[in-house]
Length: 276
Image (cartoon, rainbow, N blue to C red; front, side):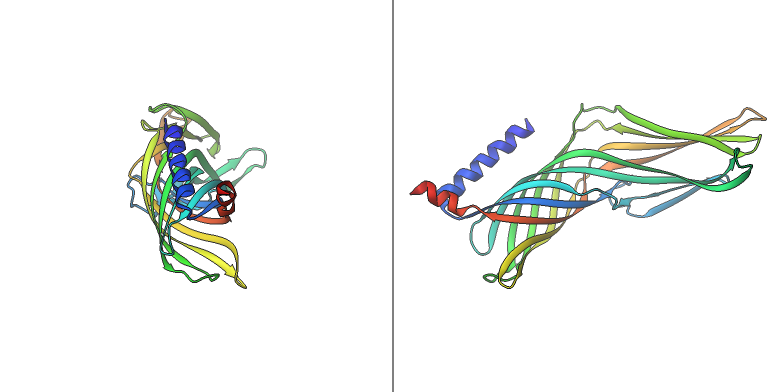
């Protein structure tokens, strides 16, 4: 259904542009993203949790380890001040956390500092409509535009909480006394779609009066999350048989800051040829 709506909107935009004879361009987009994974949307700090003297849990509510992603978009320059873009991008959320502790290395016979790091990446799709208002626009010169955006983020899978995968490890905290194990488990949420509202800036870069690339920066807000990670750490006391389990959560929010590099290709000539 999402793809049908997107293709219908794309057709309407194509048809309107062809009839209006306004500047029309296609764009190949390469971008990365700053992800947010806090319990609350505007909680953007780094947390160090010390619930036990035997280990420390660390995670950042903001993660910038997202890979480069691709997308395509179509644009319509209505006039010198106003333009519209519609596009589709690969998207996702990155989470990062670690447990810090001192462990006993049985093969070596001594204790060493240890960091168990978990880096999770979810895969999503993002469909969007951008409205651009030109703040600075001179012919064959670098421009600056304000962007307002409406986006739809989707993920594969059902609208339910489901296990996606688990990784983990184990070891010795205190020789002949305390063992540990930890797990990083990923889950889908009870929603597989989320709306975004975005605001940002873009700039068409010109060098020696020739267009090179377009740079963009945009913050897209959404109150929803489409997945979550649960990080658990368990201490096992051999002498008493007691176990203590600590669980920490990270929400894969459908919001982020996007940094993009695009290349626009003017398609005016295609419509001019069709009209002849």
